[in-house]
Structure formats: C-alpha cells, structure tokens
Image 1 (tube, rainbow, N blue to C red):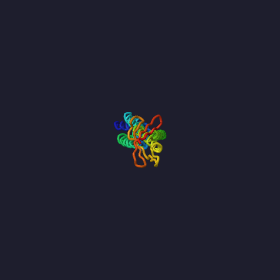
Image 2 (cartoon, rainbow, N blue to C red; image 1 turned 90 degrees about the vertical axis):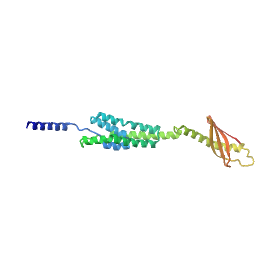
Image 3 (cartoon, rainbow, N blue to C red; image 1 turned 45 degrees about the vertical axis):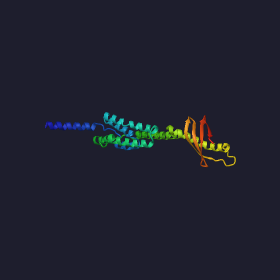
Image 4 (cartoon, rainbow, N blue to C red; image 1 turned 180 degrees about the horizontal axis):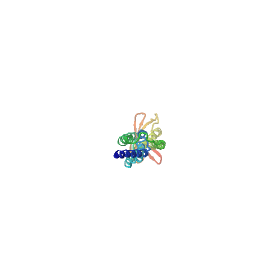
Length: 236
C-alpha cells in the first residue's frame, strides 16, 4: 500500500515538473527549410542553430552554424570567379546536401521531442534580413556584370581582342583614303577597303595586318597605335 502511494506521489511530481517546464519558442523547421530554397541554406542553418540553442543542444547548434559558411562563399564566387550559371548549380547542390545532412534531422527532432503546440517565433526579423541580403546580392551581381561589359571583363585575352577589333575598324577607312590619294589610281576608280584583319603583333602597339579590298585583293599593311594616334602604312 505504501509502495503504491509512493509511485502515485512520484508520478504526480513528474507530471507537475512537466507542466512547469517552459515550452521552447522555436522557428518552424520545415518552414525554414522551404524558405532556404528561396534565400539560401545559410538562412535555414542560422535559424536551426538558434533553435538548437533554445533546445539546449549547443553541439548541434555549432554544427548547424557551420553550414552557413558555403552560403557566404557562393556569393563571392558569383561576383568574382565563376559564371552565374555555375554558381546556380552549386547552390542547388548545397541546398540538397544541407537538407539531407542537417535540416531533415532537425525537423524530425522537433516533431518527435517537442509538443506540437509549441510557440512559434516571429518571422518578421529573419525574413527582413534575408530580403535585404538578397537585394544586395542581386544588385552587386548586376553591377559587376555591367562593370565587366564596360572593361571587357577580367580576361586579358578578351581585352586584347577588343583593342585589336577597334584598331581594325578604324584602319578600314584609313586604308581607303591612302588608296585614293597615294595608290596611283589616276585613270581608274580607287578600290575601297572592306575589311582589315590583324595577323600579328610585332611589338606592343605595332601590328601586321591584311586589308581586303572590294576588288578581292588582299593588301599587306601595318598598324601602329601610339599615344592615342593610329598610323597605317600600306605595301603597295
């Protein structure tokens, strides 16, 4: 009889302790995972880490926070190193690996160990921060794209091609003028240059090129670019 009373007393004490234990206030893990597909797994990893801290699991919180690191590296790659398409594929892979390795476990833990009616934390602050970060990232990528167009990009080969294309375009009209004035076409119509193609850079700013005339003839020429001035010489 006394043992039965003791068991009943212990059960009542345990029930009372459970009732007095505060229910943790958390961000819904499944919603965090869905929103991470839009913003970045770094968004969900941060919220999951804060949830783990609230649940008294600092080791798991640290693991979640570590998943934020790729989320900071990928925007850097998008801005400076890799094409946007490649970064998009990496981001998709990042999301899938993060979800399977971390987010899914957090969703299961909360579902199995926390009361279903636990208080939900407000989304106003995290969503506001995520929207601002996303806007800054989109603006930065757009600005870098425009800057790359204006400078020919960071590829030295492309910059060299742009300089040579500009010289070729300017040389077309100059070759036509040379033929008209010094080509010895006193009794016939002087041919016109329709295209110039640089074939070799002898030294910096000095090129061998071929001028194609409207008669079908290819004329060897040289182009010199010095101090912003272009000089063209033909080998008539």
